[in-house]
Length: 204
Image (cartoon, rainbow, N blue to C red; front, side, top):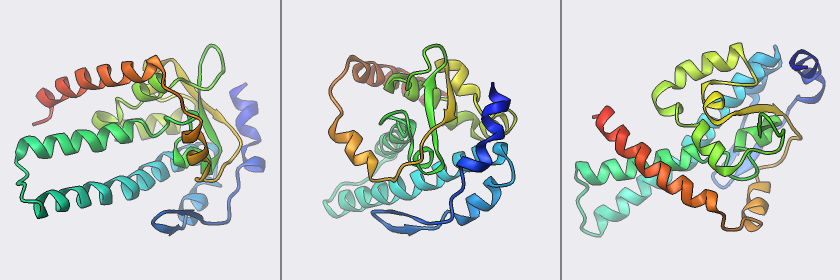
């Protein structure tokens, strides 16, 4: 089934334009040139594009936050810097939060789904599947190239990545407006606290 699915990727997943976000126009031609070579390169290019977009979106906000604190008279000590870092990683881990599609997955045409039900993965599943990004991101890229459907995090969350309709980034705002409070969100916070508490002992 996977082979049949990816044999058609060349017909359905071609992009020759740029995408816009709040910071301006970001060219994805370099990702697309790699992606068009094969389905495996296409999947990996989506991962790289996600990393690029999330850094572009998150890092400036974190820098601005630090500048505001400094101007307000607060001095960022090691403890405060750690919490800022945690906030950045927490946002990154939830990149698939809305409709199980990260920014790059919307652009490239992918979605995270539950392996058993084939339905869009829950917010908690999307959060858990990204736990390995911080400690094993290069390895995840290699696994993503070998197995485009499932990387290490997908085995943890019982999810997989499938082809989906391509969407514009502005659809994230539409999904945000339809979001309602769920028990999953409480689970994300609790598991996130435990995860980062444990991570603080692993990473100095």
